[in-house]
Structure formats: structure tokens, C-alpha cells
Image 1: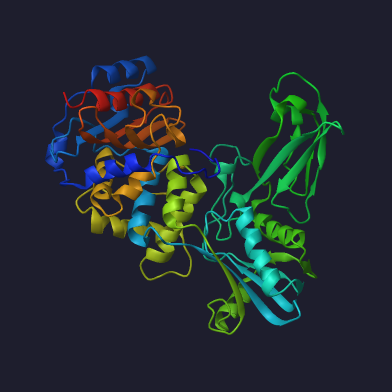
Image 2: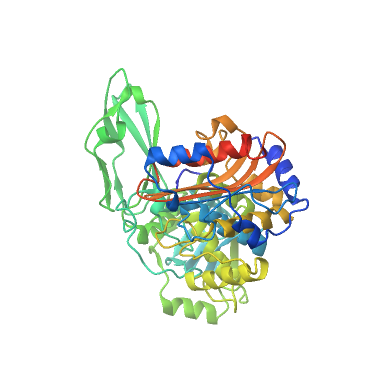
Length: 505
């Protein structure tokens, strides 16, 4: 699991496209009886498990020769045992969403002027309606607000009212999963998710003043921040975050009680905000004012009564004549690539909730976990009948409850390889030894394997496609659930190397 910001696309799309094209040809569904005929684990895998002190009954592995169309697996071990896949579960979420919603699906964030306007003055409220965009970073938010100020209102005589009702998710403690509430990867879904609910602090040495200047994004209304921190001249950059002695637990005051080393140069530190419930309002108001807009009131969440009235009058739906501004997210395919390459949890959860909102039965008024579960179950039944469905929680793999079998993951990957989305989906996966979460892994098979990784306490996992040296292509799944799972990661690397180098022998 990772929380890195989205990065540029790796220069390996052609290779992944060729892999996906090869997988499309003649891929039959694998009979369950064939999968049950299993060879034992290869010696390199057995040795790696033994070194990690992980028993074979804590492992599930499957390697299927795909390109030739042969139904008998090259390796099959405990493939019908439900396992926690960690972030490998993102394969289920992202592929089902691509198939159900389409690669070009986008989320919309809207701004509505609810009142009369004259000469750039709005007498009324400015309504910001979140649509669930998982990639509404500071630059995109401020571009939308700048558009409003240029073409509709620069002065608001009223409030900025936030509509976050597109998603309905029970409130949770951001630190309940691992006790790290300020880790950006623990951000929770929000229909108006701005900058992943994280504040990004950039430290820049200013040698003449002897201090490091601090820049914050986004600007947060009502929050006092330290503009600089004393700098010390040293030869090497050490543990610079610890040396800063940051105090970020107070949502109204961010300060630094330590020093910054001159040798560190410019550094960037993303941190989850201490009061995530108020983050959207503070970020919108702070950005509005920073752009030169005036506001007599404040930014706040809409009350249930206000939302009911706005819906009844047609203001939110656009039925009532009103001035509206709209920002579209990047397409779903780009979001899926960010999710799979860098294992972004909150983005995956947004995609899962969106599946419930737009592909769910009965078109609910908001995306909920219940509607998402129902939508995924219906998709699975339609597309993978006869295959045991996964047990979903939030769709990201950041869960102790989610379960899936190796056989089910293999069926999903085969379905993806046969679909018109095959090249796109393969292109979204990390490449061994090249990029994403596999950048530092699989060096011995660099460029030949395209896999989603998963890692939690007691869980290590991989699943995806591999291109053997012989020209044979494979579906590869490896799941380990054990207290020593982290130490057993070399067993998954051995599985991958065995697949690429030896499975065809």
C-alpha cells in the first residue's frame, strides 16, 4: 500500500499493449477440475518459505499458461482457499469499474451561484457540489474557483456551502487501522475530496536569512502556520523530519519547534490534516481568498434542510436556471493507472463507491458501501458465473476482512485479457523492475511481469501477467497470509522468476 502522488506514465505502454494483445487471443475459461490438478511448489519457492518460517498451508499460488490456451495450470496450490489479498484487491475494483463505467468516465465538481449577481457580486450562497472526484488536487480546485471569479462572482455576500452528499460513508477514526491517523494513505473517502485531505509542506533553504521558508498547499482558512524554521549549516542531511520537531496535531496551528539542515536542500512533506472533517471547507475558503475573492460569510457544509431545498428547487440538478461552473476529473483510465501503479487507497475506495453510485441497482442517491457491494456482486455474477466472488469491504485492500481466492483472481485476469480493455488494464499495472510498486523488485525479470502488489501486516501478495523467456504468457497469482508474510516476500519473487524462466520446461 502506498500514498505517493500520481506520477507520469512509464515508457512501457507498447510492451504492455503487446502483452495484453497476446492474452486476448484464444483464452478459454479454465475448468475448475483442471485447476484442482496441482503440481507441488517448485524448490526455489519451498526454500524461500522455509527460510521465512512460513508453512505451505499459509500460501496460495497459481500459474496458468494463457497464450497457448492450455487449460491445465503449470502450478496450482490451495487455489480455492479464501485469502486476504491486501492491495491486490484493487484489481477487482479497478477492472470491474472500467468494464461497468467505461474508460472515459469522469467525475464532475460543480459550482452553483445560488442568488442574484451583479457586477461580480453574488447576493446569496456559492454552492460547491462534490461529485466524488478522487483526483481533485489543489491546482484543479483553484482553476475551477478562478473560473468562477472570472466569469460569475468575485465577491460573495453569503457563505460558500459545500454539498458532499454524493457519497454516504459512516464516520471512522483515521487511525483505527494501524494507529497512524496522520498518514496520507489513511485518508477516508469524501465526495469533495481535496488534495487527498492532506496538507503538503515544502521547505526551501534561504541562506541569507539563515532560515528555511515553508510553503503550504492548499491554504487552509483559520489555520495559523509557521512561515519559516531556523536553519543549521551541516555537511549532511540527516533525519530532517525528526529534527523539525513538527507539531501538526492541532488543527488550528501548525508549527515547528526544531531546526532544518541546510544540506537537505528543498524537501516536501505531505501530512494528513488533523481534522479531516473540516479540511474541504478550510481548503475551499483558503483558496477562494488566496485567489483574490471576497467572502462575507464562511465556507461550511450544507445542512440537510438546505440540501433538501436545493434539490426541490432544481438548483443542484440544473433544472432551475442558474449560473453553473463545472470541472471534470481525469478519465477513469488515468485514475485506475494511478491506483494500480502506486496503490492509492482512497482513490480505490472512491472508484468502489462510484461503482455503487453509477452502476448500482436502483440508482441510489449517494454512493454507499452497501450499494457498491451490490453493484460488484451483480457485475461478478454476470461476468464470472460459477466462480466464487470475493468478500469485499472498502474495495482498496486496506482491510482485515477482504478475502478472495487465487482461482477467482485468475478468472478476473483472464476476463480482463479477453476484453476490449485488455491493453488498457495491462498498461495500468506496475512493471517488474521498472515502475510503480515493483520499481525495486523483480530486477531479474525486469520488463517481463505486470503485476499488482499487496502488503499488510501478515499479508504479502502479487497477481497479474508474466511473459516467459520461451514466449509463453502466464497468469500469476501468489498470496501469503502469515505473521511472517513480510519475510516471505522472496517466495513471491521466486514464484515470479520461476514463472518467467522455468514454468514452460
